[in-house]
Image (tube, rainbow, N blue to C red; front, side):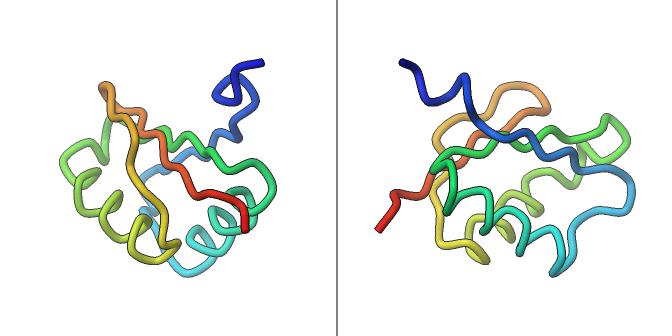
Length: 77
């Protein structure tokens, strides 16, 4: 079965990202390995820097970016 179908979707809105968002992404990656980040249109200009911060903060990898949806991956240990 395709794991991407079971990925957790985390919405990133005008509040942007903070430590709580990073921690939630870490929890979801630990559980699911794949997380989709959906960016609101009003933060589309910031999404590249948000993605960089999330990838660095979670030690994950960006595997796809289409429009305002990014998919990140971190292998379970």
